[in-house]
Amino acid sequence: MINVYLSKQKKSRFWQMRWIDPDTGRERWQSTKTNIKRDAERIAGQTEKELNEGTYFRRSTITWKDFRDRYETEEAAGLAERTQQKIGTVFNYVETHCKPKRLVNLNETAISKLVKKLRKQGLEDVTIKNSLGHLKAAFNWAKSQKLIAKVPDFPKFKRARTKKAMRGRPITLEELERMISAIPEVMKYPGESEKSRQRKAEIVASWEFYLWGLWWSGLRLEESLNLFWDREDGICVDLTGEFPMFRIRAEAEKGNKDRLLPMTPEFYDFLQDVPEDQRTGHVFDPQAMRRHTDRMLPSSVSKMVASFGERANVVVGEKGNIDKETGERKPRFASAHDLRRSFGFRWSRRVKVFELKELMRHESIATTQEFYVEENAQDTARSVWASCNASLRSTSRSSAQNGENSGDGESSQSVADKEVRK
Image (cartoon, helix red, strand yellow):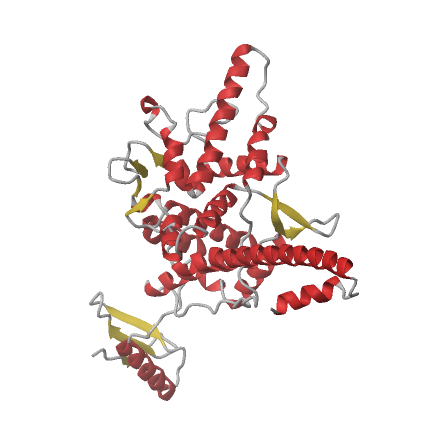
């Protein structure tokens, strides 16, 4: 039981509250901001109640800079590297558009203005929503550390009535081959010497191998760049068991769990083409135009694959931002993730949904159903209608010929309708 007492010093204008802090064992003092004893007693009683209920809070004076430093070093440091990068990006958004001096300055009004600025910047609502999720998690941590009294209310995004659309689409084998054909055009290596031509051939071959690998494996971009033949500090190829498998450590995968997952026969056959003496280190090593001591960053690899898609003119959708000159949305060209979508779409026709979930390494089966099962149904409907239309056309032609021979004058369309009703 915490008791709050009132006192008034000679030099003090207001009544003071004092109590023993149960966490530190030290005496705490706080002004009631009133010189009327009756009002001071009411404030002291309310404070005593909040202290005993655990709801007492003293206005925080922590600066935004200090809060960011504490959160990134105390909380975010234990999260996945990619998550840390996203948190850093969100905090940069806050500093660029809100410029808060103190943490308490980032209230509902400031967050609403942040959303407006991000939309104006060209970010899609789904991206903004995910960014605010990281910011809200940071506020929840601040509240747990008694840095703020309450978490600000975050804006709610209207749920679209249609199904959540993929930002791209599965590409076809013909489109993949066009992207591969575009690699030499994008990778313009300087020099015409024999050594230069040999170097360019090595670079092009590394990218061809990489694109085919994404097509057959279904790996995410960062997973593919962290795939090893013989090391277990990332994602390891395991060919020792009855069936080939992926051995995935928690820190190397989006789901943040240690996993042993199946590998498709197609990808296994693809890997079998690699000579055994070359099965060491990274499985994929797409090379840059200039020689570097370090491997290419995932962001650079992603941009390069998108360059292949653009050069091959493989359009998979539209971007969220609008071209100021034309007033239309810019086309979205095939990316590395569209190769993964192609993998998922192909296998959605072959295996059950829970098996597809394992192949795609989705955390929830709802994700698998949302992105692939409905698309699979659409494809089935497309095939059924195409087959039905072909059958009707064949029946119509046959009936027309019979009508001409018999001379009964009945139209071919009427005959076809009767056939459908039968």
